[in-house]
Image (cartoon, rainbow, N blue to C red; front, side, top):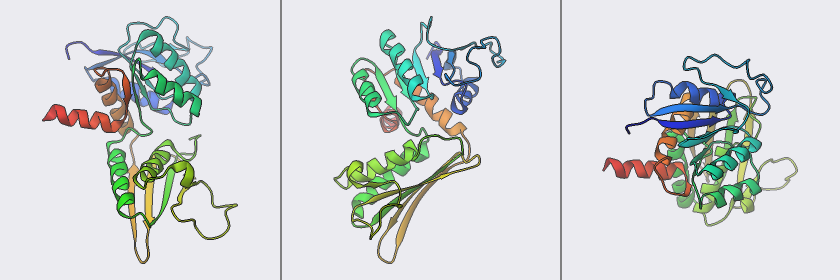
Length: 271
């Protein structure tokens, strides 16, 4: 790559946005050209009171005047993602989506957008979580009669519950068993008296402190159980994965992609 990719960070004032900006410095493949802050940020309405950055990066409240971008990375809110999608469609810019908790209407918009631009969406950009999802898929298929519970823990400020990663794990397991998460999911035991239903996929949520992210898939059979666990201790792993996804996506044709597609593409390139 001869010229650095010009990227925009949507949700730049959030935890992940800050991590992405920090991680991108020193990466000669990338240059953050625009940083769009969360609409709820204390920076909104105070454009002069923005963080000092060594590369004189200027923060923006929106997409007005944005141009000459190669890829957008969104870790904002559903409203922020919608605005970023509008921009990407108008200018034909690939979009990396890390935002979770959006509704079916926005999901359908992303699906439709993938006919015109490259869209890579992931609930989690950790390589370890990608492997966890693959392992759970295999385990759920091999042990169809075993009960499955997914337990996730995150910091106290996280808004959506269960996490997007937990939902993605449940969807992978359900698909491996020839069913859907909508048919099998139970998100709380309260109000569900009686024995556990066959095939049920249960979710439990923990929120507190500064937990970066923990996901456990527990498969329980008669006399034994299998636990698949991923623990993130550094938010930098997500930023690193999202930036790698941006570099890869910038070279892809329109379509809907996931982390697995990026990993497979990189493996093929290595061969």
